[in-house]
Image 1 (cartoon, rainbow, N blue to C red):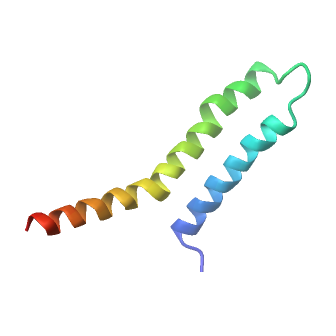
Image 2 (cartoon, rainbow, N blue to C red; image 1 turned 90 degrees about the horizontal axis):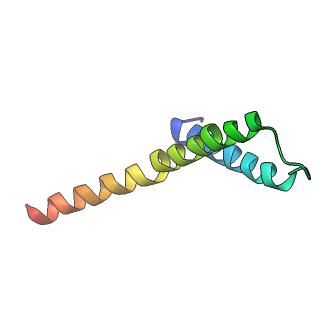
Amino acid sequence: MKTWNTSLRWVHFLFGLSISGYFFFLPADGYSAAVNNVYKFGVIAVVFWTGVIKWQLPRISRWRQRRQIKQA
């Protein structure tokens, strides 16, 4: 069964893998400015935000719940 969690994990994994490919297949004279901008502003942003949504938000939510239980 495919859930948003699984989809988010695959998006994060595939975009992160494309960053590895970007550096692994780096030509001697470098990429064009357009390709660099796509990776600089697009791909890295997708990897960052999917990582935050996938792993950090649930962690923060659990931390807040534990904190509220301790204060009650």
